[in-house]
Image (cartoon, rainbow, N blue to C red):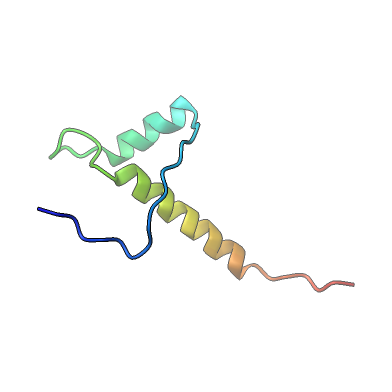
Length: 66
């Protein structure tokens, strides 16, 4: 079954993340049903966290310039 086309194209990035953080992420994302971290789960988590971060930045009050 073909996947549906994404409205926003994706870009492959390589990240260097400490092993303790990766281990915790994999524990949190692990699927008992699949017996592994589901395909795309790590990308989805990083995307969600980055969007939340950007939303927070966009909503921070801007200090007036003197």
